[in-house]
Amino acid sequence: MKIFSILMLLASSAFSQKFGDDNPTGDWLPIPDGYVWPQVAEKAPEFNPVWKKFSELDESQQNAIQTNCWPGEKVPERIEFAAVDLNEDGKPEIFVGVPSFSTNGPPGDTAYDILSTMDGMAYRSIGAIIGKGGKGVTFLVRKNGWLQIEYMFGRSVTGIHSRFLVTFGTEDYHISRHESHDFNNHKITIRKSEAEPQR
Image 1 (spheres, one colour):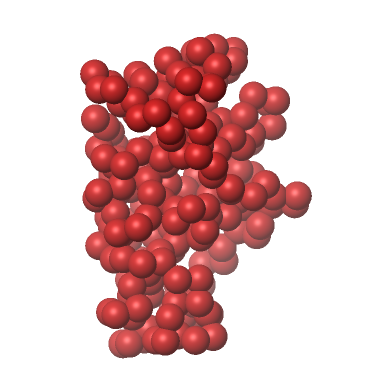
Image 2 (cartoon, helix red, strand yellow):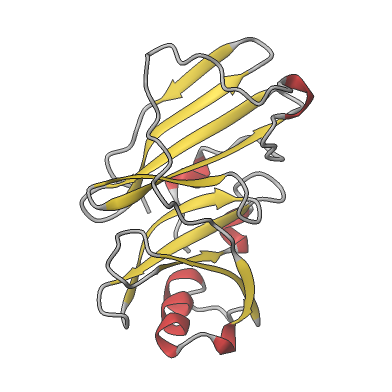
């Protein structure tokens, strides 16, 4: 199985849009380096994964999911699935929830492998994100022709909430921004961005 560097950064649990009792306003802390986050894309798609029977997907999608997400293993009868056209080429990318990837993340959250196709037949993995049934995932203005993706999660017990920005580079999505907001100590940690995702 692929090990995404995105998942290696996870150390918190239980995403809360309002951040729980430690931050009832739902606001992020002031960013010390003055970074301005990209805006939500105009007519941004919603990320709404649904459960689908694997047997009901077309053959090319089945092959891609088998090869990329469950290599050498049996694919579950039902999978968590979403389709979003990230680069406006008329061929939607597919997001596939993979439980074995999710074990590295916050409990209750799902890691989604992103698969893309150029010809509608052959797919390849171009990155991964974390979501809780679609919550905490937002599509932002395009860069390099592809929608940027923000996802977030946190842990009210510790007061630490993380915010990620993933951007398409030359071939794949990579983390271009990762902030950890510690609301108890009013401190932000900004982690180094990655040039390209490590698999």
